[in-house]
Length: 267
Image 1 (tube, rainbow, N blue to C red):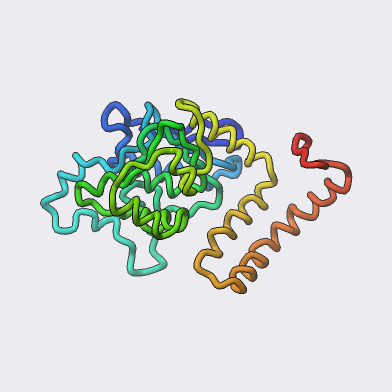
Image 2 (image 1 turned 60 degrees about the vertical axis):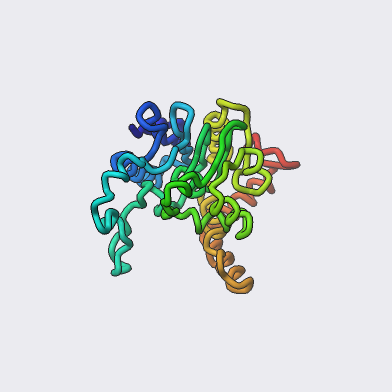
């Protein structure tokens, strides 16, 4: 159902439930994906993860057959509530890893549908590589199921409030080309090549000094919602340890002749 394939510092986390439900999310898959990404974040040998749905679909959303079995309960997802006590661990999201705040990059490799909760999982990733035939959409709109895995938070931050509301309120299909044009994805590749392209991108990122990669990634998220002065201060303090640990040594390598004229081949 969920497995990890490793190629050095690049881990590909694979959700394989296509034959049953086009990789729709049931509790077992949600638990397994959360465990896989938690293991990735904790492993010192891992640098970048690729998230891929096997069989031609990224994820068709929440398993509605499972959801229909919860209809008799007054609060069917009470066990996933955020705790009142901030010191208690936050349970996984209904779609699995959607509440994790990792320290390392994750790239979504999207083939076919990434709709409803599957769209939210793609938005949870740092970058999205879509096949030209892939698509997004809030398809749960037609069934009265709200976005509860970060969709109403992450989509406006990526594409702006107006575009996000257009996509969320209409529940319409968003093609890969439209997603690229509005900033909902970063790369579009030929059909069937999303995984390979995402893994290639992951390998490129994994070649760089990782303390710096993670510090800059963290700073991008930390500055959200801050005034300019506070954001600049946050960036400065966030980068200090990295500058000392990696940056000065990197400057010395450059002074010694490495990486001139944009050449990264000898890093």
